[in-house]
Length: 618
Image (cartoon, rainbow, N blue to C red; front, side):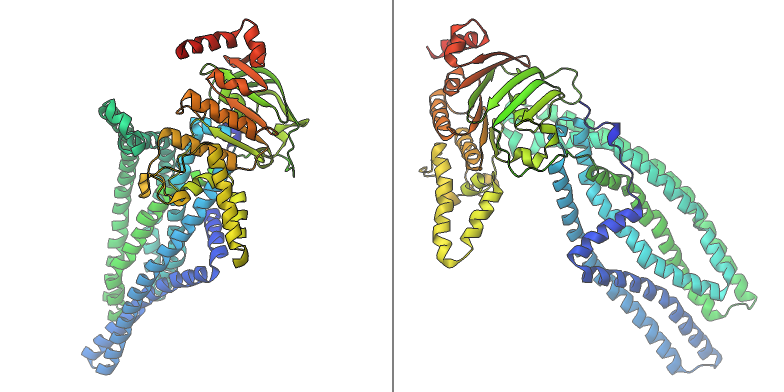
């Protein structure tokens, strides 16, 4: 199955497109602040350039004072005006720093929300494709790059352009040739910026796999999740070697690109220096020829460093920042433009009958079918157990039944409609699941349960805040609903560790308590039961619970799911006896099907596995 193939290439986002997108986000949030920021940036450029005009007036007044053509008061007033503009420049710079930092954080929040929303809408199968994982890694890096590119470009477009337009008009009014030489000095720098942008874009695409790997191996070395096993197996040196290898690969790419970029910058700086020297020579020439006054000479000469530094900053640092980040920023928009699963939105999903007809399925980048030629019909209200050895395709089959994955070949029909033609949101409605690799959320007991159905939780919270008269009963209903599923899952609410009952914080990361593996599993089962559902899947969620307790949980589960469609994936065949039907899988095929009694009466994989397991309990 091709998930991230060439067919999903998207058109690159232009710089103006990025600016328009980011500004539209801020406009929706706070249009007044956005307008103020734009005016502030323009004002900073104009005020900074106006300083040159006041410098000329001041130097002319001092020169006139020496020659007896001006008064002291005039010179003082010009000096005060020049100082006032300098103070105003500093004040505007400080205000801009504060406001732009705030607006940047707001924008990053909006962009992060868009990225996470997109990740939730793409086809879940792409998470099985390492190329997609590179995409999402590059997208998160690109999110910060977009902010850098946009705000740097706006700083150039508003602040710097205002400064250089004012300065250009001033130079032109003094001597047009000064403006020509000043402008020509930076043409090579502009060309160099384009070259450097392409270099860094190529580097970012090559660097993402290295970055994702060294971040993962760093997690293996340092995170609490891996700490015990890494220390027990003495794996620190091994993971450190892998970390260093990928970090070295990432660093080598960066160094190679940066070295070439800096060599280009050095060459361009020599050209820039030539323009600087040429401008100074022309200034002296015009002064000695009497074509410009002392005030104009002094004002331009004293501002020349700032002008060239500003221009150098624009092309070698600000535009440099854009060129370095532009490729990464494109990755953010490329991710937002990835194809999503489409389909028709349905108001209800009764699931009276589900059919798999000739279904085969292969994971991305795999030449082997995980499932092959599966034919299966499931009717509403059935409890079906799926058994088989590890790797037989049990979990993959359940992911197709939930609609998370779609068949590579064949078709899956729900009430006669092809699952691929139904919107994912509709497909997932009314389905709950408890997986072997459940999540242990660092939240309270109540939050750990209610997170499976935020719509239901929100409705309960709305009842709770709907009015004082209903507050007590709504709170009681919420607590009762949570306690009910915890009881069904045999979660030990009477434990002394749960000092604050349902509001006990779980997970030591935030000062809470930790649970045993079995307790976390029971909590995960309660979470699955809490979600409003007419179909539920238990995908080996009882691995840390002993067989007797597991059998009790499954008996209760069968009672709870009496009128619902239920699938139980288990490697303990004794627990499968509660099912109406047992599906036996081997190497991606359904090799047998029937009740426990039927399967035990005939020679087959099920009876073989059952007797093999029974030996361990004699």
